[in-house]
Image 1 (tube, rainbow, N blue to C red):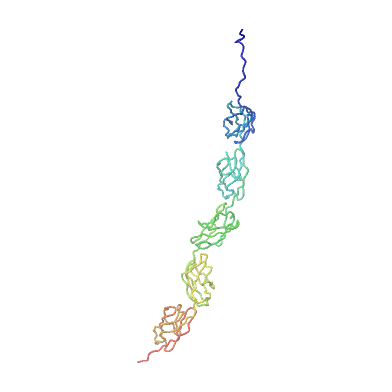
Image 2 (tube, rainbow, N blue to C red):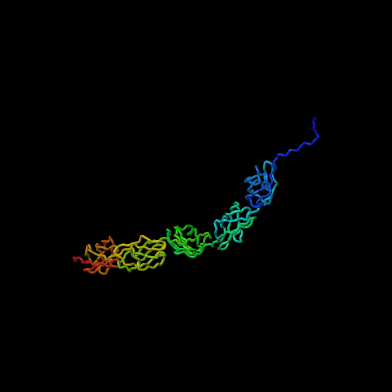
Length: 435
């Protein structure tokens, strides 16, 4: 007998479908992008995605069926965090984005001119969305390069230190010091003149010279320089052209005004020396002519300084000759522009006359007489007694002389040079007997 009854209900079997994941808690529940968030719940095995308001986390780890860690992607406000597995998507839990307070770790450079204008690079974190950069209380023009870098143009300020801050929606950073440097000021240059060839060591005095980066003479950079202190710099001059040039110093605080000048001087030139000879005892005055003589600091005859000298003009010097030895020596003039060359001065010994040819002639004069001897080059006079004769210097050992008229009889012939007169040599005037 069939006891089956199709009207009887069938028994229900248990479902084998897995449940969707469930999130019960998240920690932390707020933070910035990149925050690692720990999610606890159930059904996390095989998770394929963790999203924050629909934006997938770039990195997450399934720790267990009940725990996942995920990096919060970029976002703003409060977003729902969900976990997706092959069995579905979980409920959402809230995560609130907070903006971190920015931090500045360094400034480059950390100093600049009080006139402003220095481009400063700020390095740190949390710069995204920056709304202002301040140097002390003064706002600066700025550009946000990235979350970790911004550039700003330092505004003008007073010499001293201020704090630089950056502000974002997350707050204002702690200040980092920036030093405003006073523009350097030059008060003097010593010496204030020198040669065209350069190479002159000079000293600059002023204020604000610490950190000097260049010294210029007009457009030419100093060959070298040394910062001695905040008030002194020494430098070696470059080459130049005749005339004044402004001297300037540059520091991180700026470039000094063109207030002091250095004068480039042409080297002195000697073109003449009168007289060009004299006795070894010196003491006689000579006139030196040339150019660029106005700043003369020394006149030398060989290695010996002139006894004294005066400078009537840029083209003339009058000097007293020092003692010397027989012979020719160079005469030099030294100025801040250099030392001259080319002129000579002869120290003379006494002239010696050894013979007259002929040694006689008529009283009417006119006889050509050859005078021989030594030291005759600088002859200034030939005397027959007290009467000067016309003469020509042939060499240091010979003169030709025209005997002047005079009374019949003997007369002494002497040669005169600067500072000396020779011992006399006899000459006889004799007329032929009448016819």
